[in-house]
Length: 107
Image 1 (cartoon, one colour):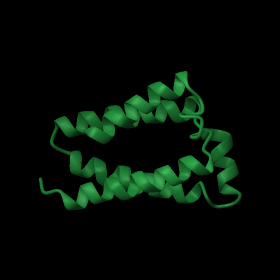
Image 2: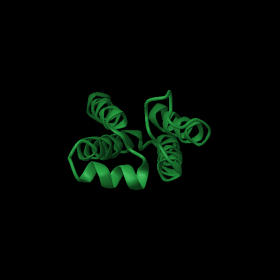
Image 3: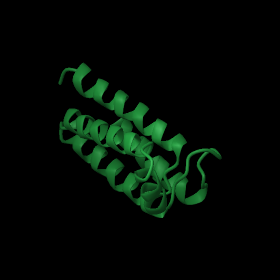
Image 4: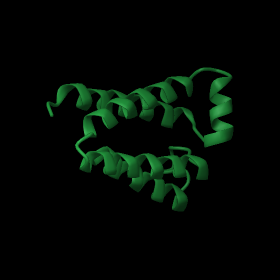
């Protein structure tokens, strides 16, 4: 549920402050994805499916983070979602934490 709440908060902050903390590039499309993903995470956590959400959020975050560092693909992600290198590294970190939570916490 925590990751869902953080995603919702980031989605809201991104509409007001871009780049976030003067470092993390975002745009409206990424903010909407964060709001939807965060809402889904909160909803799934209340249904007892937090582990599955963390697993999939971790996989998606890792893939987006790695792709954000690949030349050519990073330009495409930057043009669509405003992703920069700083947010790619953050996605990798969040992916690792999410997968750690998914596989390290018993239900």
